[in-house]
Image (cartoon, rainbow, N blue to C red; front, side, top):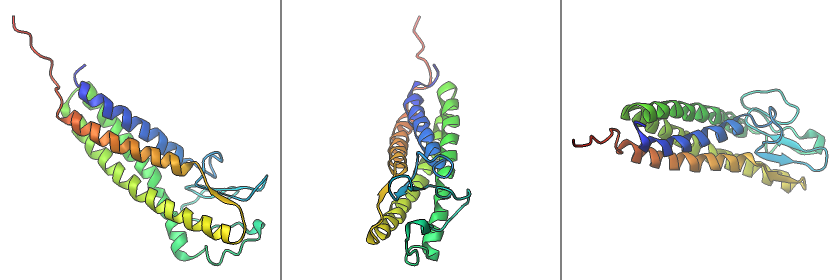
Length: 192
């Protein structure tokens, strides 16, 4: 193997890519993954990257739990609507991490330059993921508190923690890629 030092970073970035893809296909595409679950029993609304349960897939949305008797005037402001548009950064981070995986494959199979490019793409994916994770925790934290203020059950979904797992995997991937850049890429020549 030409570049063993690139392998740990490659595996961590691959894991982060998979987690970011899961977050990106959250509700309404995949109802089992969501950022916020509102309601109880059979009438639970799941909020994801591109909308909520029963909505069309779109970039940016308003919280619309009218069937729960919710006064949405405090929650459906232009700022909150624009913050839901920022969630598009999750698929962008998944694409950057995927690009890091491709570069990492080049680094692991052939040359140090692939590992350097993997480090750059992964670092950018880490920054994007950190920004979007902080924004979505604030956004859905505010929304959860607004729902609870009106006695509507609301809790964080699993996409928050999957995004955190991707963030940690990317951070470890950057560290491992940095170490991989300085690793040995040539086999030792045995003295005859």
